[in-house]
Length: 290
Image (cartoon, rainbow, N blue to C red):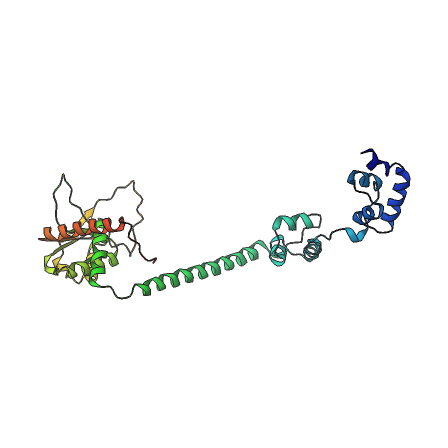
């Protein structure tokens, strides 16, 4: 150690050489190699107070972005506009231009609101079109249903929406009620597949007492193809004055209840098929992705 430090004994003379080289534009590595200095602490002491030459400084990659951001701010651009233009974060924009004056508002609040509203409406239009395209593609992907596929769909639909037999209440009969016309149409198609004719059905409208009962019966008659004269007396729900109803207006048609007479065997087939579906779904059999 004594030998390695002996070459630094004349520190001031060595410092004069190091400073001269630094001012001549040499880097730390060049000075170290030129003076054979292998101790960084000694090198730091020799160059203390001497700034590095300009060429050794690393350029700041964001200097150009910062200059451009300030230029755009002075032109009246907003933080959001500058962020989009330069592709940098809003926090960086704020840091770079926060000392500059805030640009004057060029639009009235009403004009700004109108522009924002048009932008929102266009965004909603695009989103609605994406929804429509997705639904249409899914619709087309179904293709033609086989009898087996319609049977399975009907079983699942009934188990979700239809009346079920209970151990404490033996009611093995197909009894279905729903307010969606398409659900009713699918249920009737399923019954047709099972060989159930319309004359075996008892149908009635279930609706609020203040609604248009006759209009609702006419509507469901058109959906089902069953004459209004064949409908059973409608079931009316009494109005609770403390309840605020949302199912009002011309589109409110109540629900249609469909009772299938002499359907105990069909009910048992439906329930058995349902548990068959459940068992297969839980079996872990590999299946392709939809």
